Amino acid sequence: MLNAITHTLNDYGGWISLISLIFSVFLALMTGNIKKNIKLILEHKDLNKQRSKIQSSLAKNIESICQNIHDDKLFDISIIAELEEIIGILEQHKKILPFKIRIELFYVQHELQKKLSDINQELLCKKLSHIKGALKHETTYIG
Image (cartoon, rainbow, N blue to C red; front, side):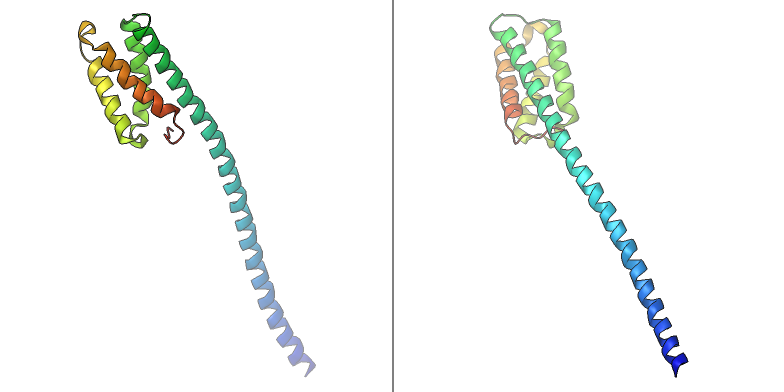
């Protein structure tokens, strides 16, 4: 009788130990996932700060270029090179830009393909100002 009780308790004890082991492994994995998720959230906040800096930097660059074109009447190959650099940065994230901004970007690119003397500087500044406004707006996501 005592052997039967001992044998039954050993069987149940073995199953309880096995379930406890599986549960412990599951908890360890979940805790690791929680740590990874927290780490990803913190990295995402850092990326948002960096994205915001990039957007504000691009907006300031566009603003200074428009000021050079409009106020100072400066428009030469170096300004076009700066615009091409900004367009290259925006092109990397073209798929996530709003449709209106992509159209404005297309017009700027089309205008810059013309000869230097044929470029409509007023239209260029207008389109660049639209892009600058979108970059300053918080809902536009780049990166």
